[in-house]
Length: 511
Ligand SMILES: Nc1ncnc2c1ncn2[C@@H]1O[C@H](COP(=O)(O)OP(=O)(O)OP(=O)(O)O)[C@@H](O)[C@H]1O
Ligand SMILES: [Mg+2]
Image 1 (cartoon, rainbow, N blue to C red):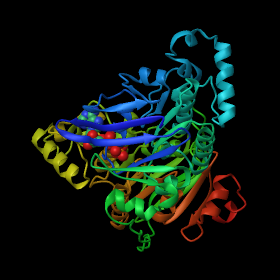
Image 2: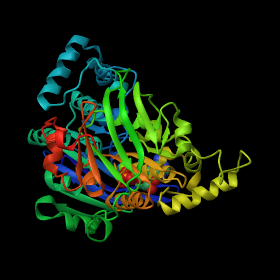
Image 3: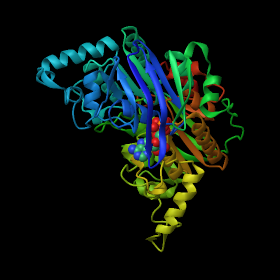
Image 4: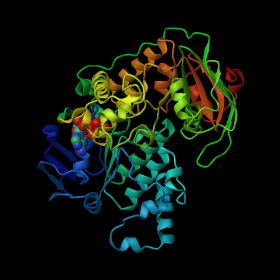
């Protein structure tokens, strides 16, 4: 008897099926992947299981009995836990307080000390290291995810759902997570994992269900399939090979950082004496284990944080003292890796989010006055070009919190790749995007580069870095420990530098 059976699950939003008669069964000890393009219905299906959405029709059997979970609290009580695509931690509370928040029944009265001990035991047993006393807002995205997993484990779940867990992880963290998942499965836990990375499915799962436009189109044994078959089921064709960059960068620097440092300010990884330049027509990749200063570097360049010494030049102009808005107007665009934090305003609609940056300028405004018609026109064009899909009738009037994760990301990119821009600081630009959408974003970044503009590409995905970058800078402990050419940037060379092995740095640094 399967641990879980979902039968004929249907769910529609404004008349459009997000889940169309979906069947799914999971055994104890099984790691089951849900695969599908952005908007295929994966998150919707697990939201139904977790009691966040109510299915229009269909049945759920849990431990052989018909069940219906009306809230996450219901699902958790039954033994189903979920780490959502967008975390739901209370940002101004500590890690431990988040973990023990809203515990049902007696557990809530467990003494703090005992709670701390249980937390430490779980954390150590599963290699989920995070400081229980830290405030969540101070944590990296990866650390926050560990807290979410611990929170579920703390509640003794039997089935753990992870919605795109690796999208926020470094390669090393992903390896660790997979070890955790395998050991949990070995102990009889069942796991549902949503990921767009086919190699991860091959590596860690037992079975795969593939969704397409709300329908389940295939269920396969991982051992008897391969990435090509998965891709064919998902998008209807094989994965395309990426062409290497072929246009040599022009010589003139677009952006130059001269001895830029950020002394420790609250919440920041300090940056030490950063020197590099990005040429016009160049993509400079930034590799590094998350938390080594990538975010701070991006924010210092965009003006969100003010560096404490050194100089930043855009073309020949010293922009060190400019704030965020003037830097944007000077041509610096920003794709933040925190979609719902500083990327988008969740309660505003698509049109408004697209206009966030440029509402004061033509074509969105005339004589300084916002032109609603023009705004709608821009929104219609951009959503079409970037294939931002909103279900139902409201179209561009849809609040962005209702978009799937991938569609939110496309929206940010559509807004930031503006015509007047010169440099785009792109943090994890394809995180959470399906293969087709990732290819599309890569094309856009290449086109931007080929037009003589510049890209600073910060990514935890080494393959992405190597595929797109003309040169790769490696950050470690807030320092640039090496700048490698395309040819030098093998996975091995990057891996060593990312791990702080800086023997190679002497040759590479100072570009
Ligand atoms: N609360 C909601 N209101 C309206 N439409 C919704 C809602 N939740 C999901 N949808 C729509 O249902 C469809 C499926 O979305 P879902 O979030 O399940 O996709 P997904 O497969 O998880 O995609 P992604 O890979 O981009 O995260 C999308 O068209 C989405 O816009
Ligand atoms: Mg999703």
